[in-house]
Image (cartoon, rainbow, N blue to C red; front, side, top):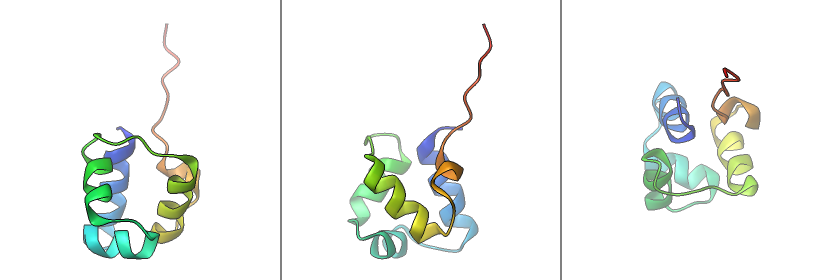
Length: 69
């Protein structure tokens, strides 16, 4: 699962709207929408803001990396 999907799943599991997450993270709702759809890259500062708003460690937002060759 990609970063945006992880953010969406966590947000929805907490019963939060995109607007509520945006308000908690100090971001614009449109930014949240673009992140969730994979249309916006995020800086480390944004990852930290989202993690705080979702009450998870930043690493919980990172997609798993497959090391298959």
